Length: 554
Image 1 (cartoon, rainbow, N blue to C red):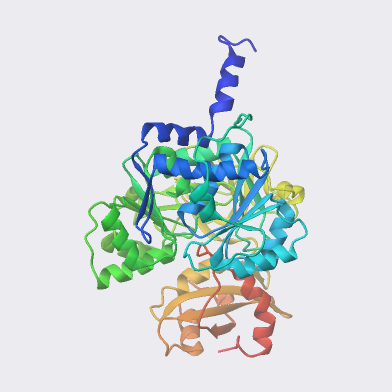
Image 2: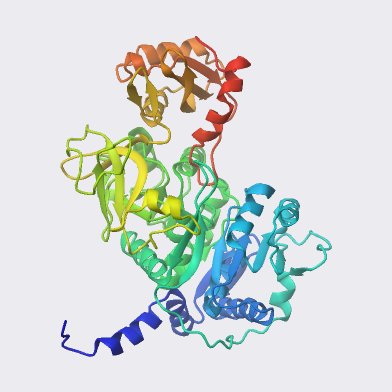
């Protein structure tokens, strides 16, 4: 094709400058004395100039130790200023920042180290026992190990482990001297899936993904340099890092407030003290905030809105949040691979609560037919009638590199050649393309030939005021294929199996074949760090629970 201008000249400039780190450095020059990061626990504030200096100290240390472009910097840190530095410093020198769940076991961590072969491993001393054991178990030993002693009480570090604090105290804060140049396609961040269905998969994110994930959040809130955000969830996952976390907030020139561990009390205290404009958290966190607000009302004049993700908002809870917390509630749905892809805005709520909303600005989301032996084509869609179920697929190449790290089989299973991501989430959509999640293909129960989606049952059972939460799984049944089993976390200690069975059998929304055949009243349910239910954990122990009488007939 004949272009009307010098395309090669444009590509040379654009492809080397379209990066998250380029925008961060513009903000360092533009807003040097503006607040960038606040640590409320230590009452310490980093301006953009201060933060850049500490980032440079870490970057220069890594360079001195031989870290090169495309080397992986693997870190297991709580939300902290050090996390922010570990996110930014590798990007300055062409390395890959890789935040990982600090709740993983030593063996899980060792498995990921062996998969990614990081040159650098950084851990919080609060998980030092796990970290040291993981280093013993892994075969591909990282060359450089740093310890972040956030609390200052770790004592002497293991031999060969560097102190992060000493690096900041003695390091070189000048810009690192590097020869490489960024390009928009290079991997800069590597995330891991939550592992709810097995071993976590590695998610590579390139510069395009990082920049346009930031743009998506900035448009959706929207965010400005005057905003102060606090993401109450762990930053190591996509929703923590990219939804009002360090990625978009520091890209736009705003300020990030650190919440190391979630606390409703301190959440309100920090909001008032630091003028927080956006809070971000899972629906479970909003429940706790609403509980506290009802008992100890607070005036929060700076708060513009609360953004939640990870689960749909049930209508009654949504109305409660709107009344007690803020009239501006946002709810996003998506995946680690593709960030969020549908969104509910304040004008959608509470009417459309329970749905996942409509496609984000640059994305397309469809519901396609499900086949036992193949993926449906993107055009093989179910009717937009709000009833017909299918698999939810996502087109969002601006926010995903469309592959997994060293996992060609999973890449082929989840991605199509033309860029569609197959979520394995099951749902419906209506005439206005509002998506409703009804379950997971992985969680689907087949009872006497009928498909049952646990999430639908869970939503109905959770309407019982004597139930705090519940989880539904399928258990093997020779005569039925599978039977439905319900694990109930009671809000009322007097709740019995007979009580909840009567509720289910008499409820208009629960068909007879969907009614649980087994129940367990439990003191806790398994969730991951982002608040998602771990059905696979219950499935793994269900056989023993049946044998031991934990799961029983009413």
